[in-house]
Image 1: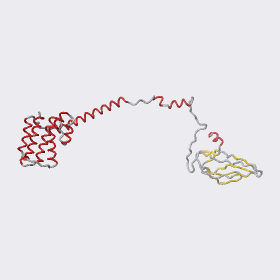
Image 2: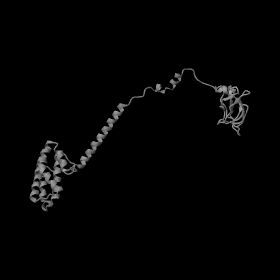
Image 3: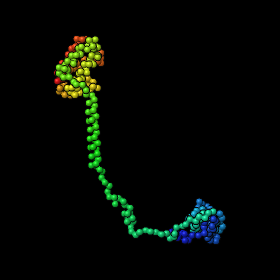
Image 4: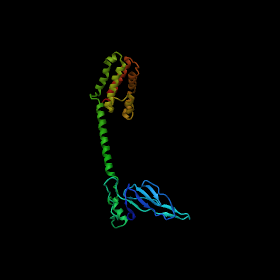
Length: 278
């Protein structure tokens, strides 16, 4: 259709140059005036002949259909002439080339679905692959094993740091170490908090050697709750409960004591160490 319009159009119209447009109004008819717009500007009007200035490049001017009427009440619709504006730029030597007419169309034979099939890349690629469960599960297992190994090494290193480095005396040697507290300055001068700090240290040494509880950051109450989870631990608690209570009162409540009372608990500690340090 565009090619047919170009064949029928006026060929000497150029942008910015006035051109005459004749609507061929019959004699005795009045007509509607042609109004300017963005595509052209109307300069003069006389008996259906308009002088306009095209304002577009290489296109057909969209001239409107005008209405004409006479005194008897007849009405006509006046079709506009086809005005094609050539590719010419005012005040320059540039002439844009127009495409060849009729247009060259290189459409291969076939149906529309044939063209769509060539663009259907998913037919060539096939279905998307499934989720790689096996590699993911293997990776999770490897990571979990590595984390467990690292945690085990960390706990082992912590246990080695907390484990006493000195040799833990056993039997008679442990009993003698406890009885040696009767000859210390803390016992002689009645420094009960310091004395029971030494009692606490020997008690923890016995617990570490017999039950493997080597974390010195634990309180006596936490050590007792840990020991209560085993049969031997409960027997040990029954034996050492008075000593633990006295140590707590002397160290943290400044309970006060006497040489006779302190000597009794030191002998109790020596008995416990002799029995449970074998």
